[in-house]
Image (cartoon, rainbow, N blue to C red; front, side, top):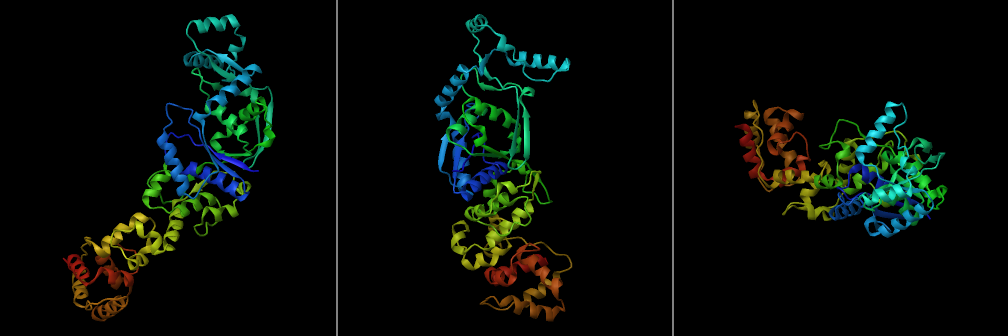
Length: 444
């Protein structure tokens, strides 16, 4: 059975780049009727926060994802300690006592002598007596993994053929001096323990793959049973921006801006593909998701495409599905009038002010006579969807204006915007009194 995991560190909110990784794992599992695990890598005690566990979980559910199991690494420390002991007994985990300053000095010397800047394994030569003396002086060792002297080759599901020459890599630290595991170590132990079959993650983690394969083998697992897929980084493209760079966009902030979850999920799942189509549910997205078809090149994140998807998602929403997010007093007629003109939900408030509140229209130089005539030709109430056509016909006949010369000054006076919902639908909602008042203000 396919088993994948999304393993965020709960040190902050969920960002767009991480949400894309989560979606790739979720859709891959669901298409294959496999299992999707959510694992919180919280062994970094200084930075991990329970509040971010809740925040990330909420954002994933909001995007339409669920999971089959939740793991918390800080609750699995005994498992990592047992794995470390097995490596010690096998001679693959050795104690080190060098401090940061000493390590930096040694690396600097290696570089000056023209050698590669990797750890020199000096601690492997330490005798039992030397170790006992160091510990008697109050030093606590941290533990490094002795890498195999080999070159590994594998095929990444996205990036293609890969290799890692382990002799060119420093032996990684797996256990800190306080006894806690590093994220690298805990992650490999968990992947083995939970039977993960594909590790799908960001390309920034690709360089550690060789070390992880070697560590899996040392722990008695078969690395060939696990496949790796690395998603290339997202890059900002297009002119439209959403306030900050894509790498700094949090799902929480986009939700606050009024983004629809189906629009964001569709954008992230289909990014790099030609044509996004219509906003889709995660169940629909899973049906045609293929991790092997994703581009190995860096892909663009165009906010204009995201907003276009969001516009289509909002335009298809019924009044019942959006009612609890509308201003108090907003009617179905109001929603039907504006829904096709929204990029984001937070724009609703502005259009509610247009039809039921107060706005200050711009003063238009040279339009005083026209706007005065517009007020004079206002039809009497009651108004329905025909009032706009009746009004502009009479006003056009009185002034000789047609097209934008006729409609644009009216739109600016009544809404304060050059674009927006149809005035046929808006005008009955604005009402005669507000219309007359705004025409007088714009003509002043």
